[in-house]
Image (cartoon, rainbow, N blue to C red):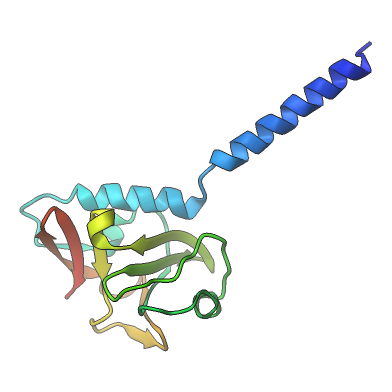
Length: 158
């Protein structure tokens, strides 16, 4: 028969293990952002244009890029979904891009392209514009020009 002390120690170790795993577990949108980064950074030097669906190694149906300085609450309201890792941009040069699949965030790109190694820009394209953001559907023409500048890859809407 298991003693009370052995049971308590075992329960404590199991609980500690579960907490440890959850602390270091990445969310889906973080994992997909790393995969997106790998795909974009692997674009060859001779490539002039790519389809966004060819460099997104995850399923998505809509993507938003938000204007600078938009509050978190507005982003939550616009995409219709609230998640915990969002930050507000503090400059015009930052990306704030949210990929959704069936109404859930599957990839979140935030920060300066110079820090991330890449950037995606479709704010000035022919795409749908809602207040505070531009929106692309997976069914849109998703061809982007590849621009390499100072060790940073930019995907720019055509």
